[in-house]
Amino acid sequence: MSKKDGSKDARRSPRRRDALSKRVIVQTAIDILDADGEEALTFRALAARLSTGAGALYHHVSNKDQLLAAAATNLVERVTGPAPSSDSSEATLRTLMLDVFDVIRAHPWLGAQLSRAPWQPADLLIFERIGELLAPLQIPDEMRFDVASAFMNHVLGAAAQQAAGTCIAPNLDRAAFLEKVTAGWTAHAGRDQLPFVHEIAPQLAHHDDRQQFATGVNLLLAGIAAATHPC
Amino acid sequence: MSKKDGSKDARRSPRRRDALSKRVIVQTAIDILDADGEEALTFRALAARLSTGAGALYHHVSNKDQLLAAAATNLVERVTGPAPSSDSSEATLRTLMLDVFDVIRAHPWLGAQLSRAPWQPADLLIFERIGELLAPLQIPDEMRFDVASAFMNHVLGAAAQQAAGTCIAPNLDRAAFLEKVTAGWTAHAGRDQLPFVHEIAPQLAHHDDRQQFATGVNLLLAGIAAATHPC
DNA sequence: ACCTGAACACCGTTCAAGT
DNA sequence: ACCTGAACACCGTTCAAGT
Image 1 (cartoon, rainbow over the protein chains, first blue to last red):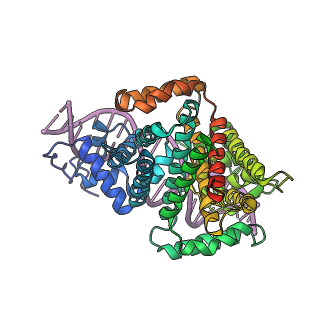
Image 2: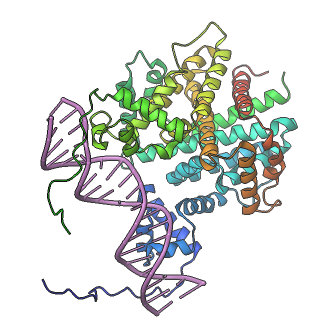
Image 3: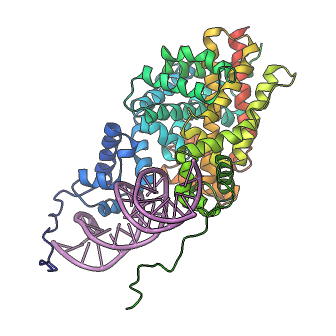
């Protein structure tokens, strides 16, 4: 019953020497996201890693949404870069789509972020490049927007799936995860309720996401060809 | 400085008369989600609406994720119903896709839910119907899964966009929202950085989401036709 | 068995106080 | 101007106590 004193034992930490900046904050956020996943990124954890207080971060980013958006933009800019080679733009578009897929797969939280807020700059950047590479493809003007949107939907769909895959089962290997998914299917409804799903299930194990994504891209490209000069 | 008594003034509420059930909990959750959006659904609000304690809900749903999944399944089942007419399955597939689009548009939180957890039963139901309606379309066996996945990506992409549209600007009308989006575009990068986006921007105002979605579906269908019997 | 509601363990965000 | 870290206003979830 002593120590009723006002002077706290713990003195304040010394002040940071090097200035904080949006750049280092965003980069550190990416590091945390990559290393420990989406749920590990809290302002407290981020502040601790940067040896500062949580409130300090708000001098450089206005809130968590903006921080995540900035992190996503940072990564996406790496694949929407200076751009085109001299390939036919159909091939370049295919390459862009696969580059986007690859960066999402390498950073699963990015998939969640892109599909959570599809109007954010990172998504716009992707959409922009898609539109640019579509330009030389002889698409009727009134269809350009719709076609670009279809490609974007393909990206967003794949993003959602990548995010979910690693979110549900962060530490399971691929086989175990798929095992779990198919088990869940059977649980919700018997084989007779979901015949197609059960027919497909065995293929999941030796199944290549990336190849599947590429097949979808080819389907869209074939659709354009068919629509623009039908036989 | 009186009333140091242990007996609290507020006595416990009387017990519910009618039993709680998963069914009424899920339906009430849907009501809240439809009326006031995703952020309005908390266990406290839900419990209050049902005149019970928050803890009671856990006797019927295991957690919030499962509750949202159940709500989504409930709505999706309405459009994946008993199924097919006698139409050609290409037309039936188109109809399914548009029905799914419509239910997502009518319940924007559903779009968020479907794309947040693409392995949940509600998504599987959609995937199942897609696969079934694809069956008669002469698709090589090894492509069936990939093609179904492309259609599913189209749904998930549209789901993400619908969710974002009403999440960012719940009370803005369409024109004001699009105004805001395009303003954000220009803010992030000048006209010269995003030429395609700025070219497209004016079209946004008088732009039909549903029609755009349908065009994407047609593109995929045309792609199938081209892939299965090229000219 | 089911319900009640306070308590717990977290969040993002704010803000007075320091430098 | 920027940083600090406690405080605030919320969450989802748990659990002892009631019926």
